[in-house]
Each structure stands twice: as C-alpha cells, then as structure tokens.
Picture 1 (cartoon, protein in one colour):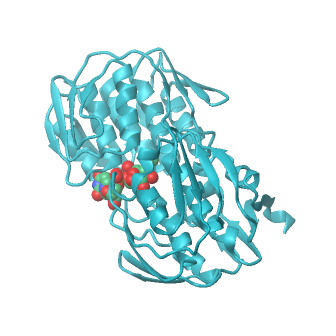
Picture 2 (cartoon, helix red, strand yellow):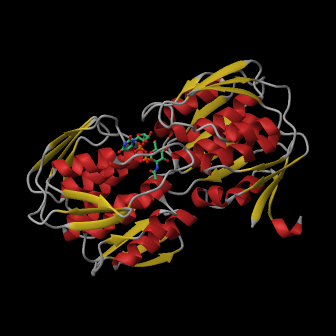
Amino acid sequence: MQSIRVTGGKPLSGSVTVVGAKNSGLKLMAAALLAPGVTTIRNMPDIADVDIMSEVIGGLGAVVRREDHALIIDATHIGSYEAPYEMVSKMRASIIVLGPLLGRLGRARVAMPGGCNIGSRKIDLHLRGLAQLGVEITSGHGYIEASAPYGMHGATIVLDFPSVGATENLLMAGAAAQGTTIIENAAREPEIQDLIQFLIGMGARIEGAGTSTVIVEGVSSFTPVDHAVVGDRIEAGTFLAAAALCGGPVTVHGVEPEHLELVLAKIAAAGAEVTTGPNSVTVRRTGPLRPVDVATLPYPGFPTDMQPQFMALMAVADGTSVITENVFESRFMFADELGRMGADVTIEGHRALIRGVAGLSGAPVKSPDLRGGAALVLAGLVADGTTTVGDIHHILRGYEAFVDKLAALGADISLIDEDDE
Ligand code: UD1
C-alpha cells in the first residue's frame, strides 16, 4: 500500500502538461468496439482506470496494446457480450460498453454497478433510453441483460437530467440504430463532444455536438479511426487550483481554456490572475485568497469534479464561502478529512459552508475518492508540516504521474510505501 507524503509551504511554479481526459478516453475505448479492425487512440492517460477498461474490452475479445500514450485496439473479433461483476465493481464506467455492444452484437450482459462513494449513481436513464430504441431489458442476479433481436430503431428521447453516461450510451446505441434518434436535454461536456467527433470519424452521422439536442442518423457499419483524446480539463483545473493556492505562476499546457471557462472565472474571483493561450492557462496569485461561492451543475456549469479542489482553496480563503453540490448526493466525504487538517467546514444537505482559516496543519488523512483525494493533496501543499494521504489508489485511478508532476513544479511531495512508515 502506498501513500502520498507532502510537506507544505513550498512555492509552486513552472509548467506542466496534462494528458487526454480520462472521462473521454474510457468512452472512446468502448466506442472502438463498434468498428471491426484496428483503432488508434492517442493522448491516452496512463492510469489505472484505462487498464481496467482494457481488461473489460479485452474480455469481450478486443486486443489492446499500449505504445507510450497511444492505445491500439484491434476489435476485429468481439466474441463475448458480457462485462462481469469483478470488472464493473472495480470501475463503474464499465457500464459504457452497453451501447457499443448493442450496436455491434445486438446484445449485452453487464453487471449492475454497485453504490459508489460519491452518492448513489443510478442508471435508470441509460436503460429507459435504450428501451425507447427497442432494446429489451431484464435484470436479475445482479446483471442487466439487454438485447435487440430485431435491431434498434431511432426514437426521440428526453432525458430527465443531462446525464453524461446516459448521453454516451444512447449516442453509441443510436449511431447503430435504424433511423433517427434525437436526444433532448443531452449532456454537453467536452468529453461528449470528443466522443461525437470520434464516432463521426468512424462513419456515424451526428449533429448537435455541444448542444443539448443531439440528432443521430443510424448507420449500418463503422470503420476504425485514429483520434487524439481531448485534453483533461479536470487534471488541468486541479493544477490551476494548486497554483491559486500556492501562488504560482504555473502554466498548464494541453487543455482548451474554453473548457474551463467557469473554473477560471472562479479562480480569478478568488484573487488570482488568469492568462490564457491557445492551448494553455497560467495562474498566478500575489494578493490574499478571497472567498468564492460555487454551485456545481452539468457543463457548462461548474464541474462537480472540481468541487473538492475548490473546497481546499476556500478552506484558507479570507472569509466564508458556500459550495452547493447539485450533481451528486453526498459528495462531501473528503470534508471530514479536510477538517482533520484544521479546515472549518459545515455540511448541511447538499451545501457546504467553508469558513476560511489562517492556516491548515499537516495530518494523516485518507483519500475517500478520486477528486477528494486530489483535494487533500492540494491542502497538504499549503498545510503546516507534513500530510500523509492514504488510500491513494483512488487518486492513481485518474491522475497520471500526479506526484511527479507536482514535484516538478516544486512541491515537496513523494510516494511512500506504508511499510516504510
Ligand atoms: C461522469 C463522470 C464523472 C462526473 C459526472 C458528472 C465519467 C467516467 N465520469 O459520471 O467524473 O462527475 O459525469 O459530470 O465520465 N443519474 C441518474 N440516472 C441515470 C444516470 C445518472 O439519476 O441513469 C444521476 C446520477 O445519480 C448523478 C447525476 O445523474 O447524481 C449525474 O450523473 P452522470 O452525469 O450520469 O455522471 P456519470 O456519467 O456517472
């Protein structure tokens, strides 16, 4: 078991390059199942979640090979339609193979994802939408069985909520259905736009990328594609929050600044200077950190995946901030750990009241989930003394070389084996 040890108080400066977005790359790997032949996905993050998705699609028959940051997927033979529980329980995003398997084989058997430590995450919208496309769905013994023996047909689907995963599953199923599928109230995240570009490259006919109405004309076959994953706006936002916390200047390369519009506006409101380039953002702060209120919402709203990192920032701001979490239930678990470092946070339902304190103190803490874990590391960067963050498998799931990248910016940080303690 490894931990991250960070000693606070070091200035952070320099530049760092982010890789492709985890939340796009994983979906593109699933989408590759649609096309017989060899698909190449570039700018793929080297993280544990990609290894799990490789196992998931490998179990279905794809042959996956990594060459540096490229993933080469041979989906010539897809012989199985089952994503077993041992995989889906490791990574909930495995549910995304449902749409492509239905498109490729006309059936899928996928384990039901369990609860997750950022609140209950249902899949009713995925299943309801697929049923509208003519998919017969049954569930039992922990599995969802989905089949479209006579093929899928287009339909107009109005999502109750712009769910990222449901939009993606329906895009991929709709791309292979007969006729026109219209997804209303679709999610608009940059990762969805990336998936749409990928599918179009494979031969799909899709209009409305980046809007809440996506129109998909089904096609009968797909061809492999060579595609580079969109830059990871959440990885970028995490380093920019670290820069705002420690002062910077830090330049993050490899991200589209417009994908971070609201995050950058909030970082500026917190008192930092934000400069953008064509594919980069620089953050520097010389004055005091000001309190800011944020409310998470589907894109282009403030991303829920940046909420914990912002709480770390607000924990040491000069005043009181309110964070309202509108996307997930109980996504404040890391706040208790932040409290162990001296943060003053009161949670009331889906709101957190953060009274800024003059300083945090280093402590042993545990990472409750991916972004909460990253936020604890950020807090450690400015805490007095040493913070040891445990359960970092959560962090390693989603950040490539997180410790090395922060160390290169000047942080006093290292990966340690708990046995060394
Ligand atoms: C994706 C991202 C995750 C991000 C989230 C919101 C991946 C691998 N994960 O997760 O990092 O935080 O988008 O930006 O891309 N819901 C339902 N029924 C459904 C589907 C969703 O009620 O059928 C609810 C969920 O419980 C949750 C909310 O909708 O409260 C958002 O979920 P969704 O947008 O689907 O997120 P994910 O795709 O799971």
